[in-house]
Length: 177
Image 1 (cartoon, helix red, strand yellow):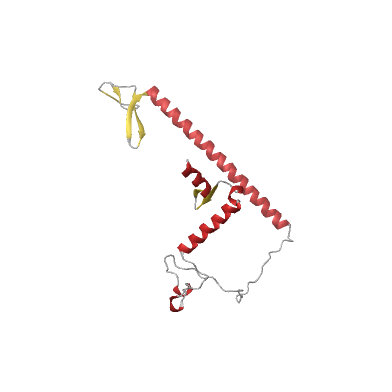
Image 2: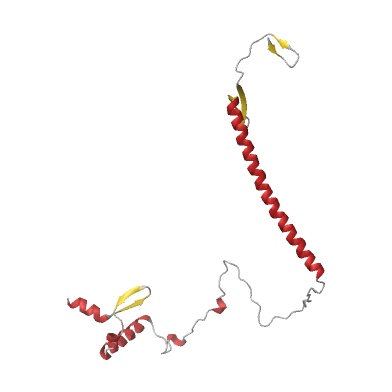
């Protein structure tokens, strides 16, 4: 006879009396012994205790903030000599100079700002040189510096446009060897 409540019995036999079904989470269950189930319950209780302790710490933090703001409110109410400074802003405020205007990101430059030189009869003024004339003038000045010995007093290499350039004396020495 198997007990069927506190007052009733019915015929049958007991099977797997030490086996318990435990919820693992997300509707997953597992069968384990009563001793293992007690261990799981203790583990879950410890996790709940830690969570409660964390919430108590957060609660104390909020209570201290509330006390601080209440003390600040009492101090501001007690000292009535605080005055709010308010200043009116005039709507007809005048700006000095010209206002700047933002340009659109992909706008083309104005062509009226570009200077174009007009030469009469195709003749250039004598102040402007073309590239060949400039290079010839540069070579002439370098020869004058070599004659005066100015290149010897300066460092051997000069950095121009991010590249190392060797002076013309070193090029001549490299060509001789």
